[in-house]
Amino acid sequence: MNQYLSDNLILLLILTLWTIPWKIYAVWLAAKRDQKKWFVILLLLNTVGILEIFYIFKIANKKWIEVRKDFGKAWGLIKK
Image 1 (cartoon, rainbow, N blue to C red):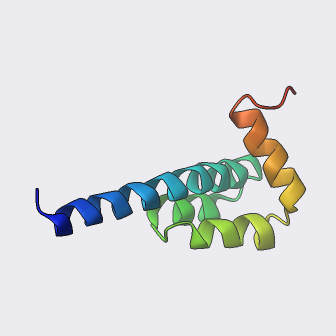
Image 2 (image 1 turned 135 degrees about the horizontal axis):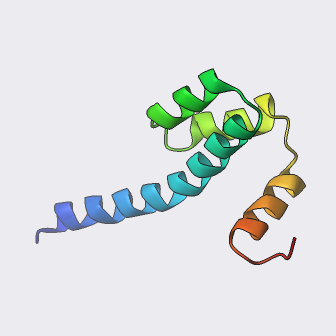
Image 3 (image 1 turned 60 degrees about the vertical axis):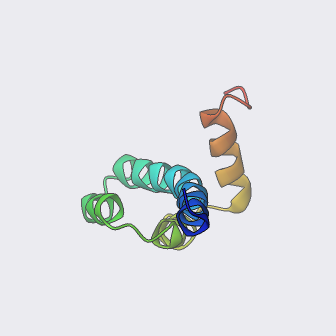
């Protein structure tokens, strides 16, 4: 495998690992808040987490401490 392909695969892996948790959390919040348009937009568009982070902090008005707590619960790091 050449170096260019190897570097691109590593970058793709990093972006994927960054994007997936944000996307899951944002889509979950939109569904929980019964915001169907946001749910579809967040589910279909891939913005490498940018739109998801905007939705979480600006539209859903979540604070960083709430996001950390929810992520901790999701990963089993914090008991409910």
